[in-house]
Image: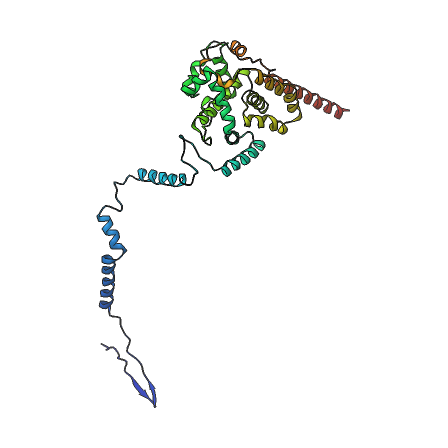
Length: 342
């Protein structure tokens, strides 16, 4: 067998040429160093601290209530956010705003309401942005001056589907206000539960008064049988403005017609706005009506008692105009076909 050749330094013709032995790494030394480093990390490093925490049950504890922990973190963030508000909330759902924030809310919601009145959130925010204390104080005085109004403020009824027993209203007599309200809600596909809560009114009593006004809006619609179309909404807003002095309703009655077609504007200015202003100024304050107790009452008697007369049927007027447009289109198409035959 051949023996491995060992490389030794040799001198060649006066030139010093050195060839070194090939160095092999000492594996035992490397393993010892790696083991020492690992042990050190385990004893004094981050891994040791995590292991100690796990041993104490502080990490990866399978018994941790993660849902509760998440809710606590959310509540902590909410509390931190509340600390940035001008005051603590005065009632459930209250969002205190600085004066500059209220002005910004008024400006933004006003523009959005004008260009996108179909979005109910814009109307809701504009309503609260314009629910000034002076107006709400006036509403409070109106309610305090009337026995029914005082009872409403004392009992603070809440208009909901459950409280009104809406399904039961379908069994009421056909001439009752309850049945009229039920039929109107079904026709317009709305319910009492769709009214947004009040958030930006600071005084708790003012907040309830404004919530009461907001929740009773559909009662006014049903009482005068006004549909939820832009003309119908403007008409009811004008009624509210004249009867209760609601700032947002006043703005809507004045500015909203500018967004309508000429024929819609003509109907409003000739028929519905004059009726709404005249009726609102002469009828009893609608905020003092305990509507929940009026459901069994004959609807015509209720209108007479409040001093309200019905306006011309807006649905009929719109349907008649639509039918006339359809007839004219048909005549135009027929004339066009006849001219081609010639």
